[in-house]
Length: 403
Length: 231
Ligand SMILES: Nc1ncnc2c1ncn2[C@@H]1O[C@H](COP(=O)(O)OP(=O)(O)O)[C@@H](O)[C@H]1O
Ligand SMILES: [Mg+2]
Image 1 (tube, helix red, strand yellow):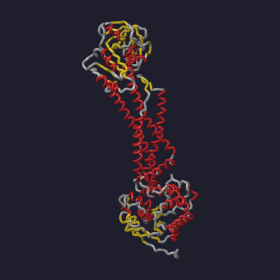
Image 2 (cartoon, rainbow over the protein chains, first blue to last red):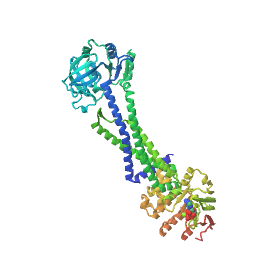
Image 3 (cartoon, rainbow over the protein chains, first blue to last red):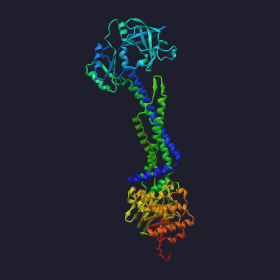
Image 4 (cartoon, helix red, strand yellow):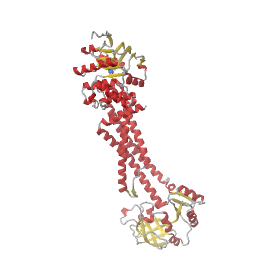
């Protein structure tokens, strides 16, 4: 067995060494491109998904989201709940939100959105919206008569730039009217406009908790949701279980729970595109290798006959072709790896710009190893078949073939 | 010792049967230098290929010593060719990507000899056929006569006991031919290899211990053993 492998490697190596250089290089480059191609689309998709996940955690749900029980509209007695949750190990801070429907009016333009109230001091601990101020400043607890708008709510003067109905280019310092669901109407000065690039978040409007209590007319102990930030590095599911075991009867979901279902479907579609692209790449690799080895084996038909005539096993002959293919694959994947690393450096410096954020492709090593394995197996098969077809031919026919 | 019994080989050309061998029986003694002659198309190559386990007979047997070679599996046949038979083709039949030395030691490598051994051994054989200065040349850098000598060295490298040569001098000028024939004669004398050689050159006759003549797939002259005086 070892002997066979030695002869196989010897023949393969000599053939690589003394066979055509240009053809060999071309093969390697093609495999490298196929490898890069197999890696690129999944990395962009992974990058896009990661961006979406990050945006969700940073601006929308924080780490854990608590929402009302199945049949309730509100979480009751939220102060007690906050106190309880804040004591749970692994919890960094909990922040309550209360939303009430409202219509914003500015120079005849109206936007109907929920107006959400929070304690600014809690909110800055659970989301990063405060770090994404496009203009003006974030809310602080003492503010009265001031409101915070998402970029899409504020909009731009040129309406064609807006995705949704907007206030048509409200600026910080402008006054807007808000008609609340409960009939109360107030004037607010725009204190700040934030831009997170998340479509959902940038269509939100915020007020301080105390301001909302003014609108309601009494102290508010209800919340529509509670955002929980956990300590760095803790397992979210563990903290979630702890919250539940502390007797919290509301719905408790990690951000992953929130996204599952919602995003899974779009990821599923991404994956289908991904797999098609990968399949196409593999087919290209298989066809190229098949053609190359067929040409090579047909060209060397006589030599294959001679090898068999002097007593070299057919398996060794086939094996020497497969070895050459594997060698081409090895160099091809190494070159492809280098290309993809260079692309990685490039994309880190110049991310792909999408409307909802800059996507940096994420090369996943697992994907890469899977692709490499797939590429090797497919190529080996693509090399084996033509080598086998030529090598199994009758010895004398092979020798006579080109004499 | 080679024993051929009632060997037949029929080729099918479409629906036409071509009888290349029509029942050939023959026995070649250990150490014998046998010449095979006959007109073109008489079945000489077919016979040699069948003895060399490169083909499949339609009927009959080939025994090498006591082994009925066509009852072996493909892998066993391959091993038999590797270790017990050396074949020299008319057209040199070297591997173009291997040097003279590598062409010669390839069968030795395949037979499982250690690296140092096979390189040294192959070098020694090439020296014996007069190619000591050509070890690292590729076939395309060698003349026809030199290539044929490499092929002979390759056939000898595993000390096979049987050497089969199908018109090894057909493509060579007379000087190179003589050189090749002398090498075969030396090998036969010094190492006692049994040699079966197809040839129809009259001047080759003195080299052989015995000559058989084929005509239309049959042995028409089983040949007398020449004794030394007759040469
Ligand atoms: N592969 C083949 N297919 C068909 N006929 C063949 C084949 N090989 C040889 N023959 C025929 O068999 C006969 C003997 O051929 P061969 O043994 O090569 O003769 P020689 O070597 O004596 O010239 C010839 O008639 C030849 O045409
Ligand atoms: Mg012939």
